Length: 169
Length: 300
Image 1 (cartoon, rainbow over the protein chains, first blue to last red):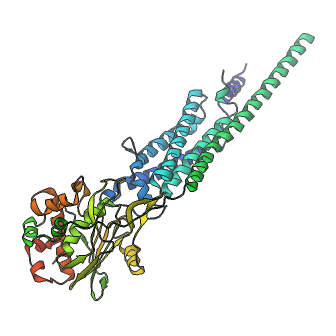
Image 2 (image 1 turned 60 degrees about the vertical axis):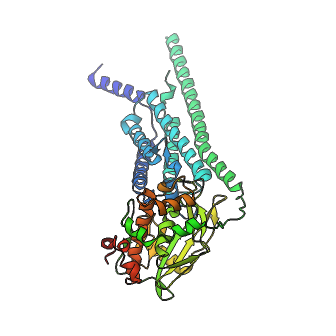
């Protein structure tokens, strides 16, 4: 076998080992993770600089201050905006192009699990806005939409991957 | 030869079968993925529908109408010597001076505009020193006992309500707006007073950036467009667990205690600012040590 033939064969083997990720998956997931990270960073700054220590928010149903200074703005003492930063940072890492290309089933499962956890937490936050705080924050809603979008991208890309890491025996 | 050809054909058929199976698995995965993706928004839509379907609870008597005890009435007009002795007090956030704004007036007098709500614990702590300071320039009638909401931070903070009260003064005008009660009405607290268009214009201008980092927080206080305060001058934490009479007793009998230090110190800060509005009138108030305690902050 010539050198060229050997090189071609090993390239084909490597390509076959890579999961076939849809082209849009990598840029879409990276962009959404970055946008989510930015929004969470903004909400974290708002959380810590709000003048709410000696003031009550007042307003209509759309009231960011009421949401970001509510009891539900913390989860086990940690501001949910900070949890948002952690979530989107983790997703950003898991959605790096080199990691999308790895055919490690556990890695793909971890990406799906983290994205799913994010969506479950978002559903809890929406529940809190609807039934406990009874006000909405447009910035928070933007974060929720990004988390849903990221979950959709990750789930769909994982399903469409061909060959799929989940087909491994 | 024929055997080899059959073997190759079998391998091809096997590969084709595997490819079909793989494609079928992929199609199933994609279908499942769409269902999983749709489940989240569908669940949220269900939550929204449930929330919309829940009717707002009717609310009965919404206004605070409890009479103030004689002890509270006395504490709202403490002896001038008591205010003098407390001076700056402790734990006080004085109002912030603003420059070059058109004077806020009503009936030809400098106007003090307070906007708050009965549910708000920070408004609860703010009313005590404000009422004490204003009582040095005039007199209130119709003040009632109230408390902050039981389901907010610093629950049931004992206070007075400006709703329905009247203030008469030779020197100042006062408008106290309580936007909501401390009683739940469905998703919000039952509404109480409404801002007039003039008051709304003041709030929209001065209870918003750049004068305050956040728009629309309460309590909001505009002292004649010369001084502003968004948020309380005194923390409601000091009043937790105290009844109206206990707060009154702390003010009158324990001037070195944290409650009197904060409430009377804050009242002195307001007094100093109000003296700027009244050009130092009346002299017995504005020349007192109490009013001079915050002279540096108000620039008299």
